[in-house]
Length: 442
Image (cartoon, rainbow, N blue to C red; front, side, top):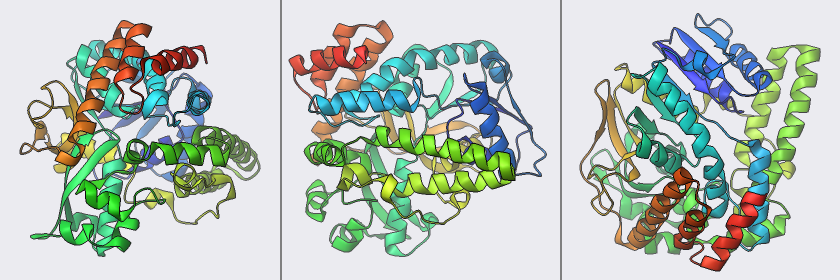
């Protein structure tokens, strides 16, 4: 089995560690990034996390070399880097809109520059690895997966760790293992909802909705009041915060004086400096400790800025082992591959074409739903309904996504503005036109 990883961001060592520790090891893992030095560094950290691996790990000089003959291609690219994210978010905040890389106008800007790059890799997969599965983790995952679905029929799923993280927190609040909890789920990427929670044969949804302390413990920051969740009648994923409380998110960004992207630019700069100095002085194993500390700082500060005007730069860093975490994108990626190759069939939440699974949306709409996965592919389970309380929000967001993907594929700035006019956080043609001009100029 050959697995290729396209885009070697800072979570690549986690992914490599998870891949190298699976029961059925791949024969070869090949990395590719436009920044060869970045790929080499991430490979070194991956090796340090699993030093005795028999798997052949290497960095490819060209994308074609990485993709050719692959069984699985994991795509996690970020055109423009974290600096582009910071610019997008700053433009949005200055124009009176919440700045978040996957949601709202900043998410659109990210998708605008990302979709063409992803589609170049899709064409390579079609030509050089036509039987491969594409595991797409490139953000915004739902929109990017939708764009791929519009132009290609390669085997593909979009993945995101957000639903699994919420399931894990639900399990924690009941004091049980994540494998003991079943969560019904429906939505779009970064706008999804748990509609039912079952432990064993018992439906505990009402019990959860009535318990303020449990509801408050589900999120890394004070994102939703128990009263709001009870009005929803379902459990929102954390990114719904930007749709349900955009004013608070924007005010907190203004209070903090920066966006998450701007904060991460500084955190990453410090990380690379410390990693380089430590690795040169004490070796890559010591560098791995710097890397683990970085992950803990980043993970512990997640949503703190938007949710409570907090900062990763002022946080006491926890000392847990990030490589042993039960959730995370690397876990979802490995779980998906293990299921698809028949090693460990599983149920999981994935981004796939609807095909009637959600009756309120179109057949070709990419949705985020629970699926059964095995060596026969990805199978939709029983049809699911969108909760009435959020039906309008999800339908309007999907209408925006359809319109935006059309704009991105046609490279039409006018269509881009029209799509933002349909976005539930904007709904203003004049603002949409101004946003598109400012974002593309930036």
